[in-house]
Image 1: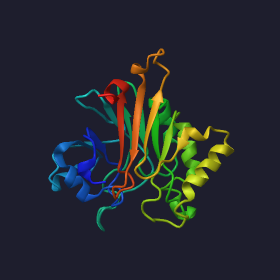
Image 2: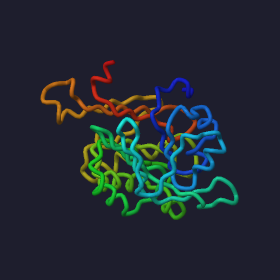
Image 3: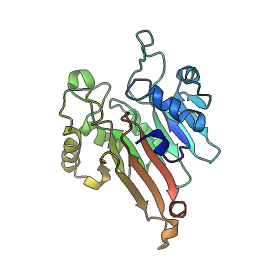
Length: 252
């Protein structure tokens, strides 16, 4: 899929500046046609790319867009580095997106830490969480920076997520676990904890999932709350599209 094939993008959140999460070509092609939300210390990089629509946030700061959607920069456990001379000179983050009817959490890259319980208490429950599940071996090296599937399930619980989708696997071979292992271990961990396997799923490249919440529809499907998730094959493991919409918008 090419950038030109994407639907209208209202905003993009960036987790940190590592090359597998921040592709300069993608940023330039999408350009100033969207609003960029970036962690503290990254706005100057975007300005250097000619992007003037980037907003820089610190942890726990938020920005409300003109369409009423609120975006919150939330903590996670990782690090940053783009060159040999800028290690941890910019921040890394997870993100919370609060729409009129739905709330979405995006983990970015992270090791497991107690902050996800705090985020869950402050902003949860979430209608949808996008949680990293891959690039975790060897554990003695990767544990502080990347969760494994068991820790991803714990994040799902901590966040009080109604539905989670596993991301950050199967795109780049960064670590030593088998490429197809994360989804298998994810399902094993869900079974081990007695959780519904449909609570935490993965998608195929290019697959679209439409998630429907009937809890407020009063038998009227026109009031269904929908979340539409599309995992695509752009060359970036975090380039996924989430649409917050109701069924009236879906039918237009």
